[in-house]
Length: 446
Image 1 (cartoon, rainbow, N blue to C red):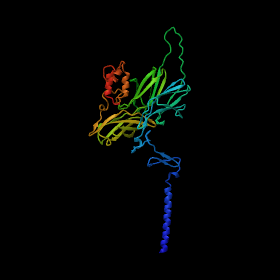
Image 2: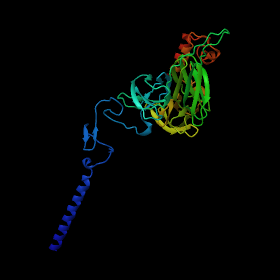
Image 3: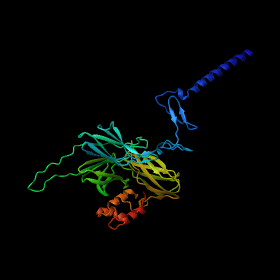
Image 4: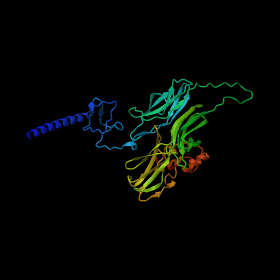
């Protein structure tokens, strides 16, 4: 019996030794210093107190302060994960004007949301469509002239907004232009028959961008309708205005879907040289947006819908005590629909806006549509959504766009179009005076 116990003791000792050796070998695999890879992924790190986690292969730093989004310190943290919460930057519309050995560029301002601030721009330049590009930081400006170019060669440009640290955080669509030598006006010989002379054809502005499939796209010049076109089945549109005199213009572009809902206006201030051709590309019109209820009983569903580019990611922002960001997708006709459970919303008035994302292009936010959370459901009517007066571009908002349209007619004789589209929506007395702006201030939505 004693021999048996000794044999069992030796076996048990051997088993325990083998077990702990194996266990120690397994545990040793978790040390970062013994890992090697072409790259590392660190999941769920815990660093307490704040400091450094280091190894031969990687380093994780913790900093104090908040110079930019993603680099902050706080007594407590909350995580808003995924697509529903992320910083974004609207896509600028880039225009080109060819000159003698140069191309003048101008663009609409890119706007950052949820922590990103646009602090400057880089211009990418190439002689090959699609690049590679040579980039130059031009500062926080909306114009730049690229000089020293070769006449007759087509140049391609992209615009990249930058954040505070010079990081490039968005990309415009590509625009092109071909520099040409300055034309020398021909000398017209004297004629006894009278007439003749140099014929000036005027300047041209070419517009192109993205709206909704089959939608009507309208371009205003200084507050008046200049041209209309229809977007194709791919939502793309293009239009041209010719025979324009040189000077300063304010162009506005908007689209209207099949139900008559309008996008927000895109405003394009342009200084047009005489006899020049200006190309404005990358216009991305915001989605239209609507709701099926003007009041929704708390906890019931409200349908938020509209039209945008085809197969686009649609992000809907609902303002509340904490802003909510909801995601859906447009179909092949550009239509989108989101059934939103209103249980997270507090009682009271709310606004919803939408934007579209296609690859690396982001539209501006749409016009706002309002609804209330209450104790009953009330079907929405168009009169409940828009200001009664002051909304000169019919986007259901009274803001700086409407102000610029009214300002154009200041101390100018009103045309019949001006009387209907401007004066009748303010103080209808046949002239634009301070009284009209006081009406606009009363209905101001921002």
